[in-house]
Image (cartoon, rainbow, N blue to C red; front, top):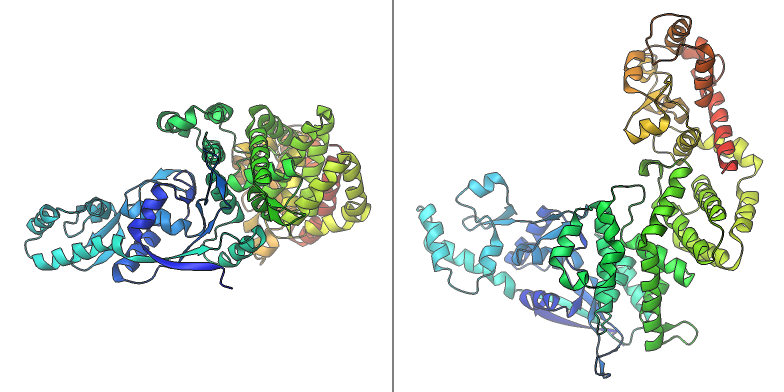
Length: 598
C-alpha cells in the first residue's frame, strides 16, 4: 500500500505555511549552507518553469491541544530545508544565518531584458539594466506600473511591453507549483527514519539531528515548550561562535527572553573561548546519550515520537516524558559550571587549542562522560582523571572514527552500569599494551602530514610538560600554539628539497617541531650540523643567533624536550632517515609517559 500522498502547491502557499508554523522547520537561527549562486539558480528554475524537486514532510503523531482534544500534528520537514530557506531569502527578503552563524542578506538581481538572475554585487547595483533586489517586486501584489515606468525611464531604449511581460513572469514564480509529498501519519519511527536516510543520501543532506530539531519545534504545549527548547539549542550554538549575538536575542525575541532558557545561556555573551564549539547535532548527541543512555540518534527520533520499543507502539506519555528528559539534559549541557569545568579539564591535559583536536566526537563523548560522572556524584578529582584519560585514549585508538554512533551506544551503556576507571583499565589492557606503544604508535608517526592526531598528542604532551619552543628560553610550545607560531622542519624543507626529496619525504611527522618565527627564518636552508654548530658556539660565549639559550645544559634539556636524538649536532642529509626512525621512538615514548601520567 502506498505510504504517502503527493500534491502540488503554490510556492506562496508553502511559504505561508512556514510563516504560520504549520510546517515544523528550523527558523532563521539555523545555518544556511547554500551559496548565493545556488539561490539564484533555484529562482531561475522556477522562472523557467523547471521542477525544483519535492518538498517532503511527515505528519507528527497526534498531539493533545490545550483544551485536551486531539488534533493532527504539524508537518515535520524531512527534505527541502535549504530550498525553503532560499525562497524565503529571495522572495520574502528575509535574512539568513550562514554556516558560520553570521546573519546576512542574499540579494538576487534580475535583468528583465535578458531574463537572467545573478547575485547582487556593487557593479550590478550600479548597472541600471538590473533590478537589484527581486524581493522588492515580489512583495507587491499589484501596482507595478510605477516600477515598470521607472525602469523604462532609466533604460529608454528598451521595449516597455517586453519589460512588463518579463516582470509579470517574475511575479508568477509565487504561483508556480511545487511537489509536496506527505508521509502517512501511521508510519512508525523506524520507517520514517529509513525513508529519511534514503532521501538524504546525496546533495546537501538533512541530518538526523535536523530531523530531531524539527520534531522538537513541532512539540506543542501551552508554554511553547518545543519552540523554546529548539531555540535554546540553536542560540547556544550561535552564541558560542558569536557572543555579540546575545544583544540581538535579548532585543528581538521577547518570548524567549522571558523563559528560563535565556538566563541559562546568557553567560556565553562574555565568553570567547573556542576550544569546544558545539553545533546543534553535538548538543543533541551529548544530551541524548547522557540522559537516555543510548547512542543512536534514530532512537531519539523514536522516543520523541512516543515509541515504546517493547510493544512497538506509540504512546503520548512516552513522548511527553522523552521531551522533558531531553530538556533537562540540554540544560545540563549548557550549564555554565558544567561547560567551563569540562573545558578546563581538557585544557589542563594539554589541549589548549581546538586545532589540536581532530575529532569533535572525541570531545562529545568526553563531555558525555563528564556529565554522567557528575550525575553519579563521583569525586571531582576522579572525574578529571577519567575524562582526560578517556579523551586521550580515544585519540590514540581512533575509537570514534569508524562508526561513532555504535561506539557511543556501547560506551555509554557500559559507563552507566560500571565504574569508568575499571572500563578504562580494560580498554587499556586490550588496546594500549606495550606492543601498541613500541610498534603501532611508532608506525602511526611514520607519516607525512601535519594534521595527525598523534602529532597533536605529542604537542599536547609538550604543553602539559610546559616545554619551551625549539631553541627558546621563555616562549613555551603552548604560547606558540596559542599565538599561531611556526611548525618548523628540523631538517629544513628547502635543504631537503635541494637534495632531491619531495613533499612526502620532508613533511614527515618526525621532522616537525614548534619554533619561534625568527628562529625558523634564521635557520633557513642550513643542515642541522651547521646551525647546531652555531648554537654550540652561542653557548660557549659567541654571538646570540638563535633564541636566548647560552648554556649547554639548558640546550641539552631543550633538545630532550623535543625528543631530538643524540648526535643531532653532527647530522647532515645522509643521516635524515636514521634521524626520523630514532625520533619516532622518542616521540612515542614521550606520548606514553604523558598518557600514563594523566
